[in-house]
Length: 326
Image (cartoon, rainbow, N blue to C red; front, top):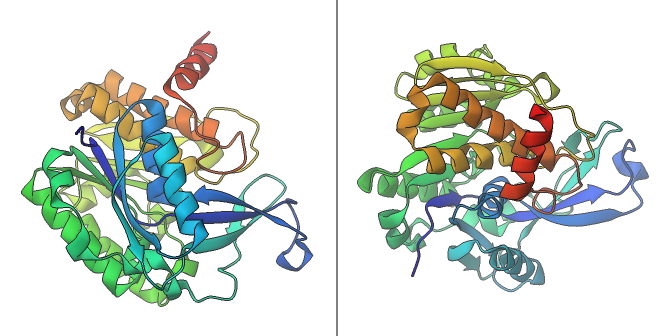
């Protein structure tokens, strides 16, 4: 059996996108469901880019939504050894509005409370240790910190990562609507950041957590991390990797839907870490190339609707970068 090099732990769900951009919730006439959930998006993007990845998370055991999401993972080639099925809690659906520019806002979870879904019931005891024995990277979000059972699962995954020297990358992915108590988010996230190796966050998240968008300042503040990446949409991104600091302008593309753009960026970054090796981050030119590649993957993901369906292949990214250079 070949084990995944990267493990992605957290939520898998359906993003139900309003079919008409620029309308209010009351005006929505129809929705289209796209497979999503940040860690699942990263796992799928990595496989499309050529890096073996596995997903660890929970879906509803008795619903067709969960079955279809697992099927999506299997068809793409994501390892599903870590997928759990909860006997009673349903698979999550999240309703998403888009403005005329393609930027999204969350409109809730239908008739259910955020804590009622299967992803919140991820069981620490059922996480397969064998996956960590063979992995190099663990990618986490922070949404599962909002719920007691899935929070324990994150803690268990971090224990296993530390035991087997697996590098931990966290994408903050702050979504207040997912938190039963949003005030609990900041202290829990800050506590998590003390245990990770790389942090990716948006400029809004950087301001919220650290009162700065300066990647170098955040790296200095966290002290123990090897790198920080701060993305800012059309304003590009800044980074501090192995003491190399820089800024990358955004690629100019036609934006259809921003869902999954950050996850594409994260996947591009991890793909390059797997390919180049962490030690290469000490070379300023290679560090810049790695972040440029990540930015390209993120940019290409916004050109089509949906997160997973829009993700590019490795060949498509190379062609995109070639066109931009020439």
